[in-house]
Image 1: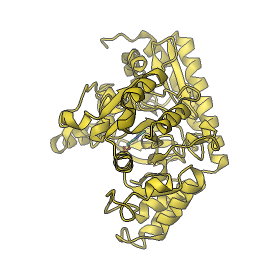
Image 2: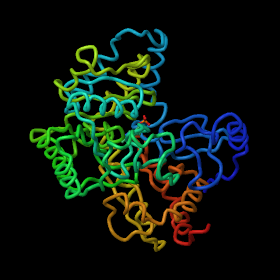
Image 3: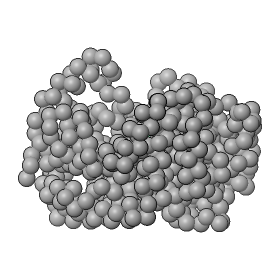
Image 4: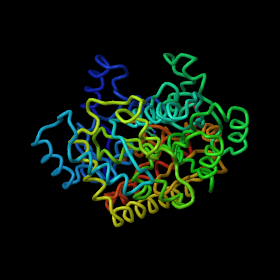
Length: 441
Ligand SMILES: *Cc1c(COP(=O)(O)O)cnc(C)c1O
């Protein structure tokens, strides 16, 4: 088996990066704090594969943290982007690709009207402002372990890098900014009912990940999202489904396509990002027309962006979504199912206790737990230290996993049998390393 053990060029770049950037990274989830070692600097990607600056090749199971649905450097996406770049990179005026991308989103999801922004953080921040403006109320409800970007009011008990790094709360967020944020346990209907019982007439919105993917993958219990939407409606609050991670990934309509009740109910607002940018900074929020038309310039709620709807980003996103057809989703679902089977076989053979959880084609492993994880407390009860040696054994064998036990493993439609067999070869030794791990190593 091909081994990857030497990273002098990555080490050199990381040493330089730390001199000029905090921690040497531009997003904390890219650091190897939770697993130890030096972050790998990638130079190029193609399909399911990444090549680092030392020339080592890896099967990629991070997918840029979700966007790369079709794999890296898809030739048709590159061609469309090159063509768009040739016409100029930003105009600060409306342009055609924005309309086409908005039409594609409206055609695939329950939103009637959509505004494009540049990051998922911007999308959730704007959706919450809009919900507060629309309802004239201040309080918002979120779930512990859900991550909605680094919006001040939403960092309370957040997932993703916040949990990976074990940061209880973030200095710089004044207490009064989170004073109106009510944090509840995920999948807990009684807690939701109690909160709305007490504060119902003050709650502007409830925001949830359509399926939690930032504390590891914790799917909503059947009917939970619908219950949330109905509870919100009963109390005049808006229901915001954050599909930044799940959107256009788990089905062509996102998690909405799995909830599968398009006639019965729909979220008032949804947020998107990741896949819809095709690897460029593009995101969106949208939903009910009467709510969206409270936004400037039609309504009084201000929201804006110099690069919103950027022609290159929207071209990349549009091309990606157009290529993400039934056949692409079938390939992705199949690769994910095969991979989940391989992981389970290897962990079983090594005698590891684990819960492998999925929401559509997204999945993750919780280590050392013997019952399904349904909320943040359950996720945090895992033996995350077992992931450290597992991660490094996989990395040394040429498989690039998220450097955290609390992240989803992202498969793409380009994960073919060659990519899967590289992973299959790597898994048994990594599973044994997880079995033999101790909290100290
Ligand atoms: C990634 C993510 C965000 C934040 O998106 P950024 O583009 O990183 O700002 C928000 N919500 C969810 C569910 C996410 O997974």
